[in-house]
Length: 392
Image 1: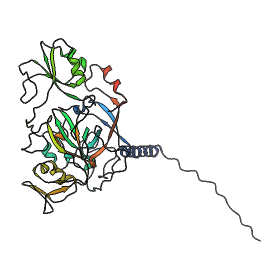
Image 2 (image 1 turned 180 degrees about the vertical axis):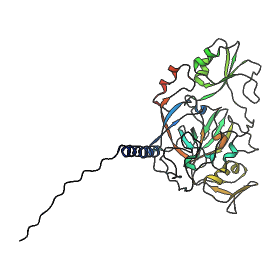
Image 3 (image 1 turned 30 degrees about the horizontal axis):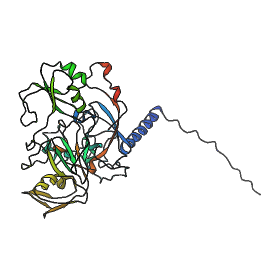
């Protein structure tokens, strides 16, 4: 009979991590978590320009939901986490475009609707088109789809809509659309005497104004009057009428038939302007259009740059793909028409065209912080009344 002896060894004490290792692990976890949250759930943005005033103000910090429309998978995987286009504080690119992956969109719980305020990648930053629009956009450089500049506008036309603008009023499928509650437009304020601009305009929150000079092609009927052209909301425009030195307040629109330069599409035969535009049909996946002169002008950028077509040649009102002439075209994805709420100070779809669905980032949900870039005093730098404001 033999006896077997089992020897139990004491458990080894795990080696304690150094302070540097613990710090590195914590930072790595935070970066990975923040990257996943930013990609999958929501992102933070700041409003840099007045194109959405007075709905959104310069200095508003937003949360943008990626869940609403479904987040899209990265196209450019070789990039430094939590950066966009460049490394923080430098002009050094934060990515390498050696690898470009196909894009897929995860399921969302809603679709883009008319009236939504949407963040999207600027489509005309495409290498083949961005130079064409340099006169209405800041200095841009071509980037991959998922690293183009982020823009925020209100969607006024969804796939399949027929859109037209008449005297500043947007019509969709021949029906006038409700104006955004804080939409800003231009008004001519006719006055009988000099105006204390601080007490009249600044006191009412109007910062964009100028003394009137005659402008060709506007809707101001009495160009011999003195006054101001102000950009403000309809509510504040009505309020200005209560001053005894104000003779009248009237909206300013460009006349129908007056061609505005740099408007989309760049076609000599279309006499459109920002206040009288269209009608146009918003492209919808699966819809086929005949390629006549007007449709070639409207949809040539789409066919050439955003549908995955190769060897597209557009010349003399004829379109060929891979050497084959086509007389009609079927769209491969949905498109949208975006406009800023500051209707006379917004570089939007009226100037550079349609937004492809694969450029949609998310829906603006609420303002979590608002900082006035030009405060009257230091104590008023934070706009407390805008914090946690739901975006409409």
